[in-house]
Length: 162
Image 1 (cartoon, rainbow, N blue to C red):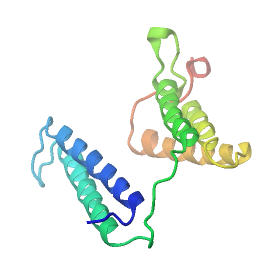
Image 2 (image 1 turned 30 degrees about the vertical axis):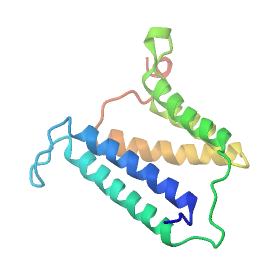
Image 3 (image 1 turned 180 degrees about the vertical axis):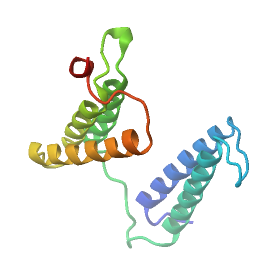
Image 4 (image 1 turned 90 degrees about the horizontal axis):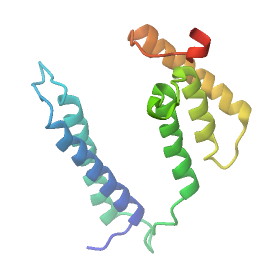
């Protein structure tokens, strides 16, 4: 069999591997049943669905694609590093790193910084657009996690709240 779309094949392979990894990792927790789900039930089912979807994408890449094939291009390193870095910075700002003296800055600051860094990954960066998106995401996160789910974590930096 010849792979007609390398992009689809490799993306399907990635989804399959990630889904299998989550499914295998979920077996370390109690799975439970459909009526009484344990903590491992959702990641197991979601990982299995992701793996199945990845297999379907891989199979379709063998039968459909452009006439000369669909080769994979160069890796876009800049967006890759900025998006992963934005998530890491979000985690550090949200919880802080007391071992090296970085205080927790809270949800709001972490969201704005994450949005600004990840916006730099696109072809055009506009600070106004990033701030508008950050505001929408901050309000939505506050309403969902603090008000709706009553989760207890720091929302504002300690120098503001005391």
